[in-house]
Amino acid sequence: MLQNVPFAFFGHSMGSYIAFMTALHLKENYKLEPMHCFVSSATPLHKITHFHSSSFSGISEEQLFNFTTNIGGISKDLLENKELLEMFLPVLKADIQMIQNFNFVKSSKTLLSCDITCFSGTEDIAEEMEGWKDLTSGSVETHKFPGNHFYLTNPSNETFLINYITRCFEISYCA
Image (cartoon, rainbow, N blue to C red; front, side):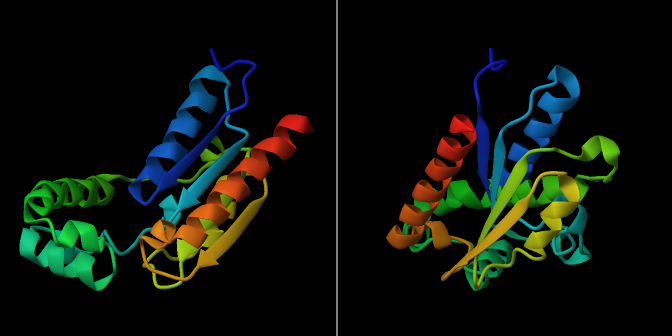
């Protein structure tokens, strides 16, 4: 049981939404809350607009491929592996459809009290990262790294993320 064990969530892209909604579910239903929530390359839930446009309705896998390639949303390793790409595109399409169909309504019940740290690439499509402050009574910090949606695969960015998250645990656990 997590009653006396500090925990945190890290989510990248759609994983950020899953992490936030899981934290909210735990808070509302079990009175448990992470000590920290780390979101990466994700526009705040109440600010998402780019996936709600009609341009994504009925999008073909080729159009999806072109869109994600243009925004830097597909890693080079994936682009070079056609078999893996064929498995990935339907999953990505389903993720976008899920975001399109998801209706998040901000209210006092949809707020966390833990700190949130936001990470994104300078060339990423994630917008208004500071808007995560509307979803917690805790503090919110944002960090931008050189790169696109996959900024975190850069070794220096990865090292920063690991060290930063480790420090957050040490500070919170020792406090």
